[in-house]
Image 1 (cartoon, rainbow, N blue to C red):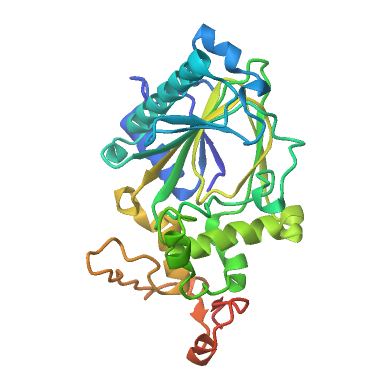
Image 2 (image 1 turned 90 degrees about the vertical axis):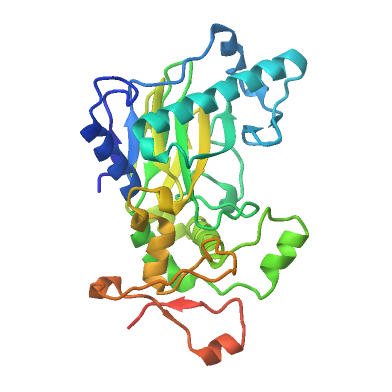
Length: 338
């Protein structure tokens, strides 16, 4: 798998053949970042005034637009300026959706629009705790927004007006990351998911999948040896370029850059061309049991069948029933088989 796949033409254009689109979607679902060096969201001339750190309120690391509430948060703007900023972010959301639908028509009926982000501040040098430090390698998972296995698909544009690049590191494939950190994932505290949901700390109840993904995210960011020595590929995204990634499976770190737009979509696993490439299915295969209920009315889980795997793909075994009976959140729930 190539960590970065360059797409020289727009998927919206007639020069992009169906075979090229299929190759691009296959690379995307396999965990590559699709890079469009000659494609970018077109800003209006009047919107150039938004490209200043002063657009942010100084309390948030980005300005966000919530389509459900039709509200912009994190900006210092008011009145007509805020309304115009909202208009730019709504236009970008529509542009990003059109781009994805042209690239992967099979996604069209299944894309769920989530938040739009505008990042006018420079990444490097920004103070942050290790868990919130996006310059450290990680896969995306969000403490307050469990997604029950749905994919996190993001479209990014570098709109820097001074031709400055945006620098990322792209790390190991998701399965390699999972095999490294799964033995250190602790079991969930009984009843905690329900408590967090009832207190409105989370938007939904965490599934075992959400618990694992959040711990993988935190374990990656807090492991200094991993951050220093794990393999990674450096990439510079040019000004006025676009890139697309499933950030729940692409291990990434944003190191440097200012002025970017980002659109998040959610996609059900079954809407993918190859659902087995999702982090949900990879984790279920490694662990050997289902991690979400798949939305069945009775809450029952889909069967997970790891039969026929190569030795390197054997499920990671659960600790003994006696260990499970004496709950200790610090004790790993999963350990390598063998």
